[in-house]
Length: 169
Image (cartoon, rainbow, N blue to C red; front, side):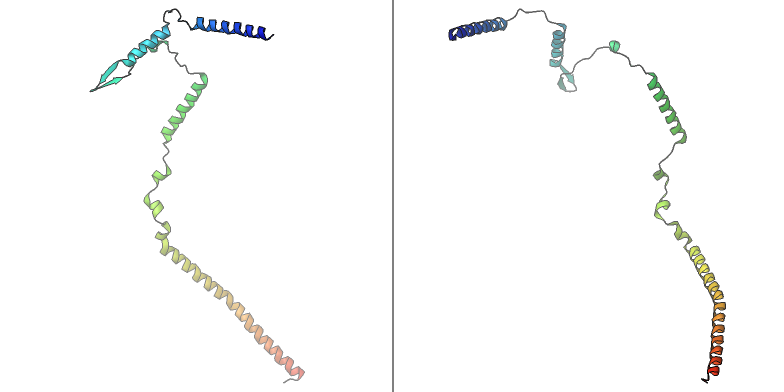
């Protein structure tokens, strides 16, 4: 059994080696494909030097290809609608031309307090209202004072009468 496994292993090794030797041999030279030809041409162009000013620059590739084969973009219906809305918005913005608020502000708008211009007028109004309020309060206090004085006089008179009746005086 051991001998058979060694023999089968030897056969397997020989088969593998023969495959590697056959595949490892140099292949017959095939003709170059178009991709290989283009790569060679690009390598030649990269190796070519171009004089720019006083120095030589390597690797500039001359791209003479035409865009004839390029697929042209076409605008779909959705894109046309969006373009129409965008054009309308731009026309409205140009017509109304809204400016920034900061640009319209003058130094007086944010440096000076406009109330300071009317300080004397404001003080005059406050003083006048204060004077009228004091006069009104004084006029309303007169009847109160009269009623208090009358009450005191009447209370004193009643106390005197009550004292005579009781006999305290």
